[in-house]
Image (cartoon, rainbow over all chains, first blue to last red; front, side, top):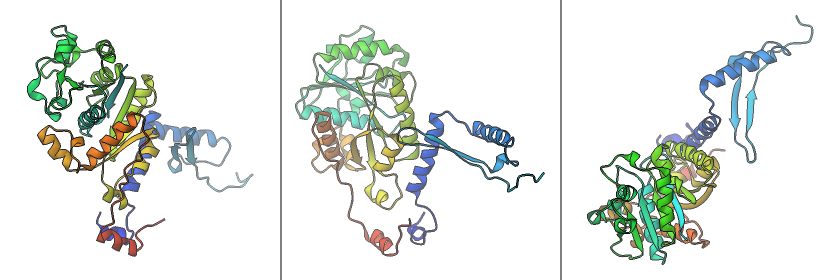
Amino acid sequence: MGFLDSIFGRRERSGTVAKERLAAVLVDDRYKLTPEMKEQMKIDIAEVLSRYLPSVDPDQIEVAILRGEGSDKLQADIPLRRGRAGDE
Amino acid sequence: MARVITITSGKGGVGKTTTTANLGTALAMRGSRVAVIDADIGLRNLDVVMGLENRIVYDLVDVVEGRARLRQALIKDKRLPELCLLPAAQTRDKDAVSPEHMIDLTNQLRNDFDFVLIDSPAGIEGGFRNAIAGADEVIIVTTPEVSAVRDADRIVGLVEAAEKGPPSLIVNRIKPRLVSRGEMLSVDDVLELLMITLVGIVPDDETIVTSTNRGEAAVYDQSSTAGKAFLNIARRLNGDEVPFLALQEQPGVIERLMGIFGRRRP
């Protein structure tokens, strides 16, 4: 990207992009986590949670493993469809 | 008793051979007895980088297969009598060498040298496994690029699995100007991703091209910033505390302009 882009802040700088992409791919490499496995994990998470909560859409779930100092952690972002007890 | 150090990377073309040649030369310049071994069987290169290609009589496979004694195959450097090269075979089958051979070979060298540096082939296959078999320590060379860093991370895992202890890291070919513009991974970024100890930062330097063309190590060239960086790494291997080269260049006109326009976003 040209420096004009960076003056106007149109795109994230490529060094930052590289770091973010690497952080994700290194963790997946280390855990031998394939994209298919991630998709299956989302489906399974949705299935388990739907026993307790209004229906969860696996397509809305984001999962990522984050590297930490001592240990890594799995972060899942699971949007819930708004509902009240006794709705059904 | 020699320290046996393997220089490896995973990805090819990141500067393993240049690093081996320069560290070997720098350590010998500082008074150590050094043997460098080219473990890239079939793709011999350390000899040309060191300018010793015309002196080869026997190679690593000749030693392993008993056609030559180790002493006969070791080539003395042109300038430094305490620096020796064991060249790789160029024509032979790479399966001629096993990890046991390499352990045996390095053990034979331990008594006569202070350092044995092994230039590993790229990849994670047999050649890499041979190269680390006899090592006490492993140094991983990477460049600040996504492919090289990813491969380096694989190597970290394999080195740890082989119980060689945590490897240390050389970040090669850093371009300070690109880093300061945020368009290249910084050394800190790479360290944060790989989580291993840094032993050297080598700037991208055109004098490497000319010194390699001539078959002379860059550490001889007073004007070479890469050469200076390799000398510093050699000192660190000797146990000296040497601050890392400050790579911040004076910002150019464009960078200053971009600073005025508030390029840096949170």
